[in-house]
Image (cartoon, rainbow, N blue to C red):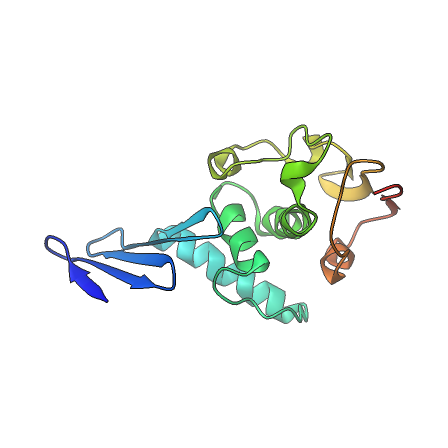
Length: 170
């Protein structure tokens, strides 16, 4: 189904998601999946594409399909464009874990962004509960007895400076 709305705007409905394309200098794509609203400006799309390229270069084997956990994580991470590519990659893997481990239900999620608007914050991931860093690199992930659910997944092992992990009693 496609409906024209005004000049240069098209709304398309596909399986409970909506794609909105707005013509002009700041082309924007926006649609909802699993409660998250994905929207891309041109700058954000460039960062998304760079991160995707680096993930492929680093042999990240997960297929990133629209509305997958990884796609939502990439979208959320690219909401804040002031971080370096390395920092955004690190945030990507932590965000995948947050979504995969049902972070909304954690006992302590202090500092972890819990809504899309909070991903726009410039709070570094090193201030999030359970994260230990050295020179801006995640070296520890300690979330014991915190109501984590789900599978660990391979994403955790892409945090190249990670030295300590404590996920007991979850």
